[in-house]
Structures are given as structure tokens and as C-alpha cells.
Image 1 (cartoon, rainbow, N blue to C red):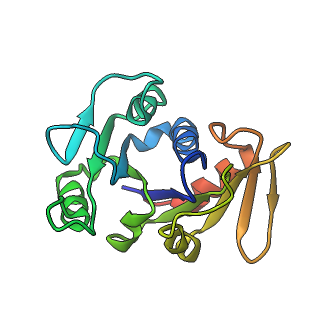
Image 2 (image 1 turned 180 degrees about the horizontal axis):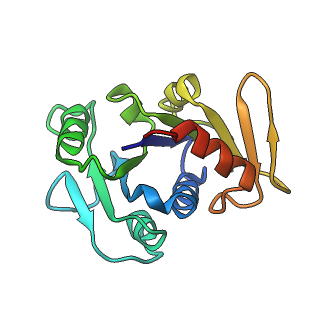
Amino acid sequence: MAIIVVGGGGRGAGKTALICGLMRALPELEWTAIKITSDAHDKPTPIWEETAAGEETDTGRYLAAGARRALLVTAADSDPGASNLGSIVQQILAEHSPASSLIFESNRVLSHLRPDLCLAAASNPHGSHKPSFALVEQRMDALVELGGHDHVIEGKTLCFRLRSLDRISPTMHSWLREQLRGR
């Protein structure tokens, strides 16, 4: 089982598109995709499973991209009355089949688990970043951002520039396979 976290600086960063691209590129990993949010979504439980593929919701997009399961987790660590993210993450890990892989859309989840791979979606049209993005910046294995064409920038942090975040380049695909080998 592989565990990947995709974080980003805020709304519109491309996290969901990147997750969909990753699942399409590596379908054999039989993904469970989990979106973690502090926004209230009027769901009956803190862990809610999406059943309808489509483009209307992020979890629906996950299913349309090939996820076996798509979960929406609502948790706010700062609110004592809200569900605790740490205990929810442990519940998901305990109940998850080791035959498939997990991919989280979240910055905050990094406070509760060590993924095999952490990617940062850097396309933030608003320019500013959420405070929780600092944890992603510390832990990221690679930065992924929109570019005019697919290419890699090697430096202190590996950066994949993709023409489209929902389509993984051959170079990034090879790198992902190498990073996840044996998982």
C-alpha cells in the first residue's frame, strides 16, 4: 500500500486535478482518495463516502478518474467540538485494505501521518498561501506546477512543470514509479 499526500497553498492550487492525474497514471494501485476539509458540507458523519462519479464535487472527480473509493473527511483540529483529524486518520488507516493505496488531499494530514510521497501543487492564482502549507513545503518530495510544456527543474526541490495537472508527464510517471517501488 502506498500513501501519497497532495497539498497546496489554497483554493485553486490544482490539488484535485493533480490527484486525478496521479490516479489515472497509476491505476494498478487501486486508490482510495480522501479529501480532508474543515468546511462544513452538511454530511451526516465526519467520514462520508461518495458513490457518484462526476465533475460536480472533488470526490466525484476522484471516482471519475478511477478511484475505487472516495471519502470526504470533515474535521477541524482547533474546534474542541469537532471531530479530531488525528483519530479519523487512524481510523481510515486501520480500516483500509493493504491491497490498495491511499491518496490524501490535505495539508493538515501531514501532522498525523508520514506518507511515502508528498507532492505540493503550486499553482495558486491568489498568490498567498494557507498557513498549513508551511508543513507541505517542509515535507514535499516534489513541487508540481503548471507550465507551458512538460519539463523538470532540478534543484534543492525537484519541480515538475506540467502542461496540465490532470495529465502526468512521462518523466514524472517514471519518477513516481521509482519512488513507489515496492509499495
